[in-house]
Image 1: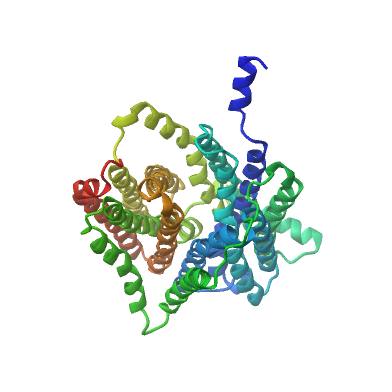
Image 2: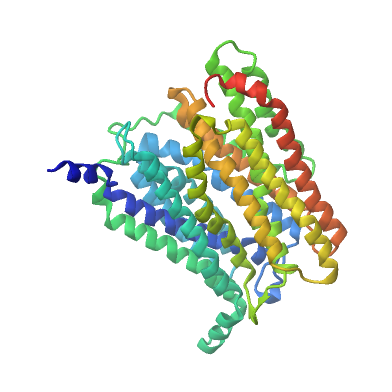
Length: 491
């Protein structure tokens, strides 16, 4: 083999990466396709095929569902590591997700709730383990690993870009509803065709994965000797379940104090670890500072599927060049901007090298751009006094939010792996998922304050989101010198 052939062979990614790329693309298609419709379906009148929920009720359910998706990743990852292996977990998780989507395709209230539970359980088993399989394709120290994850991440965003176009057309388009009438179906149930399309995407994903299992060899296989102990299983599964139950119970009158107890946990952890002499333990304090910043970031960012989705549906002029744009289509703006901007960010960080901003500064910039997106929506809210507003307001919002996401999300994931002791990387990544879970729960609580009927109240709503994210950014600026001391030589 010539040197040139050897170089090409070494640069070529494992065959399994293309399969995992497509599997993740379709899984994200199913998730974001359903997410684009979820709140809109819940608040739609019963006569229009929806559930007729109020905004507050829909927001709480949305927050609880998206919280569960992330929180259940912790026992899902543990089960794969100690019993099933990543391959079986991805297969089983994908099948459960598909069953959940098809349950939601049935126009029945009970099947709607069953579907949400199944999707949350399946995603908890699927989500952490397909990422683990991508890592398992590359031997330790393989220079192709980061590029492989970048390719994989692009699949996530392609799925997220395509899904709202498909499910939004099926659920909301007058064109598709006229087709349903011609075919002899009730157009009121068009929502459920959108949910069914998400299930088809997931089924294709798992079918492809099954057909190409031979590509993975031993990657993602079950442990040679299952190491699931009763004590550790109770700790992980019972702890995750207890935390989920506490957060769900906190919605009940008189139990709201449970939310403050949960949020107090990372604050207590910071106070305890920051006082230690050992550098590894002080870094744990930095991990929990980033945990709180990320939690607030996701609480505001996840308004995209909640209050921003309602703004797009109820207050935005969706007639463009004589065509009615389904409001779910705006959910494609974020992944589109990620696809366009992520390569630019990668080039900038590579060229800056050691001169690039530190992790705390990148977090500040992420929160800063997110806060600007909500400040932009204040005049947009005031403009609703004159009727529906231009879609360009939402284009600007998603552009600013995507810039903020690219400053914080991949940087935070990288920081967790650098700050974690080698023996605790899995645990620290679980903590990172937990920040997203808490943030999604908080997103539901914040989104409950959305009110489309009064421009003044709406302006105050967006101003409060600006204030929350801007105050967090300023707090992080003040803490940055201290954070750098906690982090030691980690940038």
